[in-house]
Length: 310
Image (cartoon, rainbow, N blue to C red; front, side):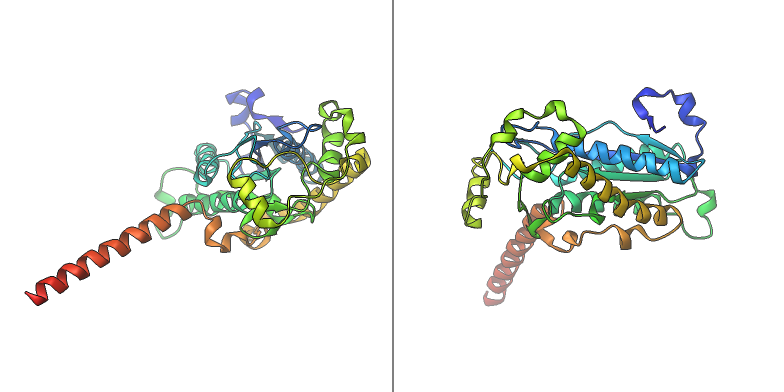
């Protein structure tokens, strides 16, 4: 059975095979999913996916150990805004990197992150964390064996980047804009993993269309007025939720296994949202730096022109 990091001792952790232990990180924002679903559904979904994948790991790879990390309510993108707890991109990215580095100092090298919110910036931040972790732990050159710490590079995989459902994927690549939210898909997932958290009123909720046009939804989101659900929660079933979770694990696990056997994680776990500059963790900082450089260049040019005229 998978282990919970919070519940084991340091001595137990120290006995595990460093190259055959995988840590699973579940993350997701706190946000409104309608009057029938819990605020923490995204994190709950990520936690369930971690658990199912961990069980699959120990079933198919004897001798390997899965460790479940505590669920962390960190999310960059939110589909609603009237009630949503979000963080800046670098907060999630740096938390993942720092956590993995801390475990890497003890010799562990394999890390997997699931998110219950598959927004463009959310996935990009997790993918950035994986890239940064590789850079920080990479060993190369003739003197690498004399360096302190583990001799094997660490790998952090953004598992959710490899299995985006149509209902949860953003319809545009630079803003979290799924075709439904709190509808049939989300309600089915909740019924499957935590039926006690679903208000029975979901059975009588009407189908609701998302706010249109997109510009109006964008303005409502920016002004913290976007709330509730869109979709058809009354059509949800436990069977649908379980099937969705199983299908997602079936898509992801073979790719994870390939990574653990030496495949390049970046080629298997990339959402391609990261190619858009607006999704980067420090996009606003880059804009400010660029604006400052332009202003400085104009100032220098103006002063040089004045000197030439004098």
